[in-house]
Image (cartoon, helix red, strand yellow):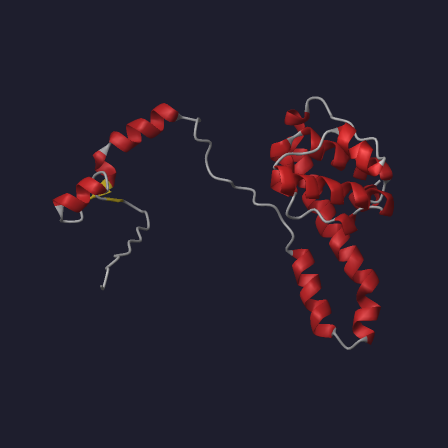
Length: 187
């Protein structure tokens, strides 16, 4: 079974939902690309409820809350942390595929209205659906190396002004972009 066939199955879509409520961090990473219109009709209220709840309470709802509001029996998946990469990859592919699929279905109506430019823009937007995959470095990873690198002054270039060098912790960092703005109160 190909990925595109899997995307339309009830089990796959329900697994994505269960994964979303099982790991707050994973949900936070995908919430901006997940759209209720990508899911089967009976799951759209569930996605709407999860996104609304997360926006209002900065958390994911429990399965009990989801069932109370939507009658959908969600469940928390154990061991999701081992499968986060799968979830992120599959959610990104699913959303991109379903966005394109929805546009293709609506395409003839859009063209009939003479809105070819709008159709082109929607297709481009769907093709660029993606997650931010590099969220920077883990602050607690390699703490000792970071501290030693910070103390190593060989990577700094003096500005020529001792006062500014002190404020910058030694000067400009080699290979970095430094942007400074001067505020003047003209009163």
